[in-house]
Image 1 (tube, one colour):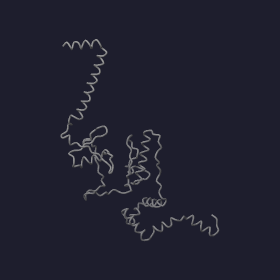
Image 2: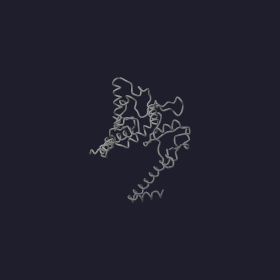
Image 3: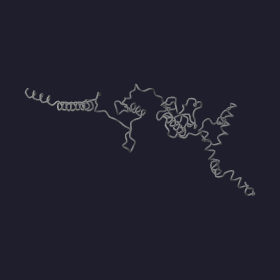
Image 4: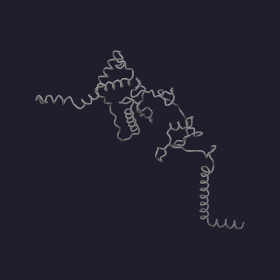
Length: 270
């Protein structure tokens, strides 16, 4: 008791030293408590899950590399629904939100995928040509939603066919829309109208004329009901007649050069 009184009298005689000592002790005790609280919550206290030692974190990794990539949303759904190696699968986003089944808005499987004959499915979707009337249903690359742009071969483009070229044009349009919406001063991607060979125009005009007089398409008139049948017929015709070789041969000459050569033989200057 006597030592305690002596210590208290000594502290009261030096208030500056007393305040410094109390502050240092408070910081030390408070810091140690905070570190221990974090250590206990993260390391010492078990997770609120059965068998936490069995938790595993999985990544995507390109073959031949050590790079770890997070799963995309569709890949996560595939792993969660089809994996048999895990009792359950959960995903976390950058904001640490867990993806659960109640967050799923909807699912849609392409109607052109035919599973009636088993796996793999048959893809009955049209190639290159969009279905008639689909233009009114296809979106612009810049949608009405401020933060939503589309880049795919179903977007309205000058190319207007379901192809890589159409998807690339949609990508350029989407990039330009994003730059416009954020007010960027960067140069815009080039977009230009589709340039078709002039030989197509006579066939397109024939199609318009047949439609105007309510006659079937020229393929139907010829008894051809599928595009691949027409392509196969043209290939066979070309192989039998040698038309392709003749066409390649004629491509080496220009009509103006031939006419000019004939006029030159007659001494006529063009």
